[in-house]
Structure formats: structure tokens, C-alpha cells
Image (tube, rainbow, N blue to C red; front, side):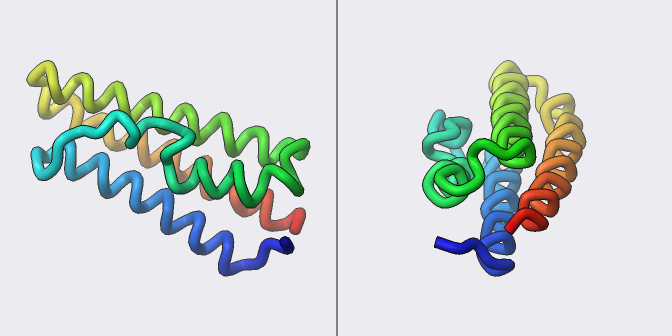
Length: 116
């Protein structure tokens, strides 16, 4: 299957969806679900493994993208742990770190898209 610009746009939407779900947890709108931080259950992680890895799994952009996504999920999990300990303001302030991960993921998606 050949990847196209629509595939990459959908990947970007999957990342925004994760950030939105995490924000809703940190603002008390939804309960934290452990699957939110699982690479195997994360929509972007699923897309990477099922769609991108078979064709581009050995490329440096793919490998970096997978690593950065894992770091973003770990950061998000840490923010939820802070939230659960009652450190509400600290956890919400930590969303800036999530935005930094998202920016790096965006750059890596662009790098990967250039290979396609």
C-alpha cells in the first residue's frame, strides 16, 4: 500500500486526538484509561505499526517517530500521575512538554512523508 498525503493528514489528526483525550483527563472531564498510554492502543501507534512499518520500518525517520511517540505517551502518563496525586496545576502546566513532543512528531512525519 502506497502512503499518500491523506494518510499523513490522518496521522496528524490521530496525534491531536491523543492530546485532546489527555487534556480532558487533566481537566477532570474523563477518567484516565491505561490504554491511552499504550503504543499498541494509541491510534497513531497502530497506524505506524500496521501501515508504515511494513514499508518504512527500517528508515531513520520511522524509528525516530516511533521513539518520539513513546516519549510523548510516557510524558502524558506522568502528567496523569501528577494529576492523580493532586498536583493539578503542575500536571496542566506540563502540557507544554506534550506540545514539544507533538512538534517533533510533526517534523518527523514531514521527514517520513518526503520518503514516500
